Image 1 (spheres, rainbow, N blue to C red):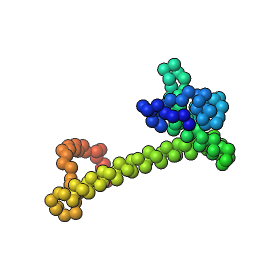
Image 2 (image 1 turned 180 degrees about the vertical axis):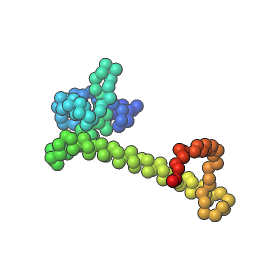
Image 3 (image 1 turned 45 degrees about the vertical axis):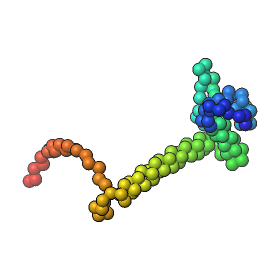
Image 4 (image 1 turned 135 degrees about the horizontal axis):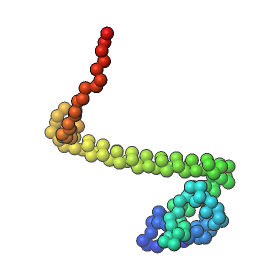
Length: 138
């Protein structure tokens, strides 16, 4: 894999389609096809040309592996990729919630003892009650 510029990370779209195809071991037309069906979504240069990131190339290699070694069709591969992305997003969210819970627990330990309650957030809410239609019971 060619070295990335110092300003780029694994999500920075830097590789033109011919280079990405060579690195992934595929034909450029295959990459175009995978873009059309949504298996990979490369960035675009100002002129409209596709630019692939290191992460895109890793996805392309995984598509190739699933197809050739495991015999998974493209629809199945697309679903696998979607589910992997969803798991990643849920894992990130779980980490955020875990950190927030740790902050709440630390705050509870430092707060004056008020039983087993966590510190409550003070809010001002207004609830407007409106009677519903009256039903006569006969």
